[in-house]
Image (cartoon, rainbow, N blue to C red; front, side, top):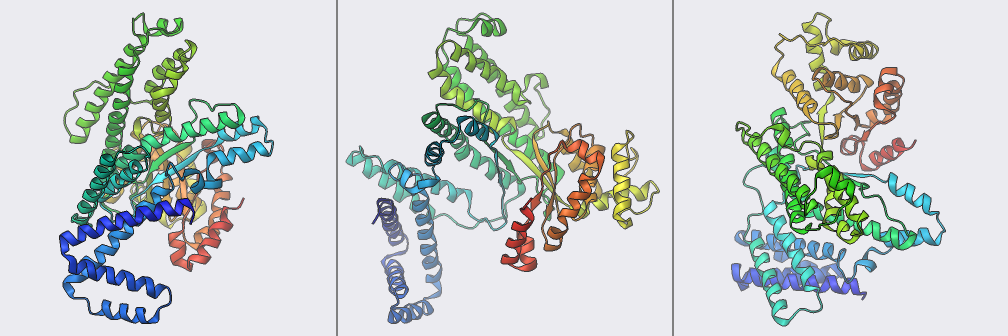
Length: 562
């Protein structure tokens, strides 16, 4: 048995023993004996023992009603604990290299080095690297945050138990803590009492960033830098963070009437509040650390002559972050704002520039080891998360935009837009997009449905550039679906171009997607505003329902090819 499998089996066995003790104490020995009997018969049945299989089926058929739930929960909880043990093994200090094997960064750079790959090519490739991960809250996700938190704590205990220098007392306390966490999970209701709201889902996304990604991103950048220096003798640029995060939580309104413009605006405020909160912790730590007295003449000239120049700069940022926290906290709660906007941080560069100046000055003064500590981590978080924490995707179904524009055209006497041909729609949309005059009359009162579409576009237009990752159009079928969103955003006062991404989902839409994109690229106005950058999304779930998983997978592959 290989060492990684040995380690995971030991952890699974230990967690299973602790779960058994919890069940014995909570439900009694009789239930535990029943569960163990089912487990043993299942193992024998899996090995081909027909007699055991018959015994198992008979036992399951005669379980009393009051015992069904604890037995089912026992196996469900055991599978959860098994997943935790297996997932932990992928990051185990002892088994990290063996578990990841050729997937590790070090193995990749070692192969590139062995193949005599030019350093310049490696640097160019790393500089172009950008992976954007999107956080979503799927309706089938039922695990409560309370349980997720306990699972994270169990993972931490497994990590601490791996240390070879633990005393007997320390090991006992960690195992005791594991038993407490497993007992807490057993006695926690696994099903939510109420369906999570879009705000709840957004909070879940923020918790993922705070509890995991906030640390993982700078750690990954350090690992990438270490391997680059080890194999090629170079370091990647401080500003280079090849990972970005977006979210659909609070922005995906397709089929969800609870995601309104007001909800989306509140999620923007909440994201900025959480970002200010997290950066405030970083900056407060830096204010304690950076008691250094030496700086470059350029730094002193820019920020003034102070005994501890870096602390003065960092404390100024700390004050602004505290104001930012108060400002968005008041907006979230609907209170009158007491902080002036010039005392609040809105733009990432306002936080980046003074910290990067600190970084460069420390480097120039021979204090690279200090610059590459918490300050570097903070700089990389600014580039990855920014003051908006994560970018937001807005998603809406194509017919909602069509209905809104049709209501406008009927009001101004142009007829019913929804009944026009595709060519007529495109001609109208391009003409209005090229016009300097507004399309929507100021004294017009639209229907509630159209007002909601317009309000959503207004919320989008209020955001600084870069905060919106994309406006996604589900069930996109024609070029006019994309142009319609651009027109609605223009009417809302959007001052910059937001990527509008058609989402092709059904098989017919996938087959028609090439023509849609060709029609768009043949429009001079459109080519001029996208700057040779176009985001397209390919759906899977609806095409799978449409034609089955195999056909859907094949169509997705076929339509991704250039």
